[in-house]
Image (cartoon, rainbow, N blue to C red; front, side, top):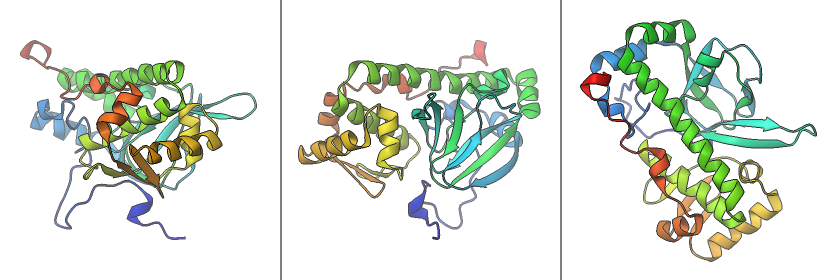
Length: 263
């Protein structure tokens, strides 16, 4: 079966566009503080662009890593398996995310990273990131900020799983996705593509697929949102956010403040 644009997650653009590979990195979260030199240096850290099929493990737990992946198109996840092989998704990644930048400092990860849809990733070699750390403190701080964003989202996911009921967990996840994808211009009139399965969503929210299906039906019947064939339509964002106890502050829209002393 062929893979079309609707099967993945990509920005619409005109044929004349010649985008930078890193154009979505920290978009609406600090990219406007990057200097032309910062942008050129980050672009220069990219060794290659890879196309990876859906349902492919990209980085295995405890595997030595020598490059990090900047997601250009599609959806990726980080996950862990229990001893029975049951998967818990601990993060979803969307275009603009540096998926496994943590591996630059740690040299290996304590979890697996996988492509959920067909994806394109820009690979930044760790030798090139070493040169950024050595010579570009301002850009280094932005890369560090990127990993801190992941940590902030992980804390929010712990809160969601520990304190919210099933409908609140699902509502919170879709509020987060709406906010993150809006930052990279992938939401139109409350609608966005997120072509994953209900099993994936269940594994991210800590409920069974059957329960997930019931929650989605309930949210639809209450006029809050719909999820069909990988397309999400938020019908009442305020009500969905209230159900989820959702506050987007942890996503740090606007990004860090890089004053002259920190540049």
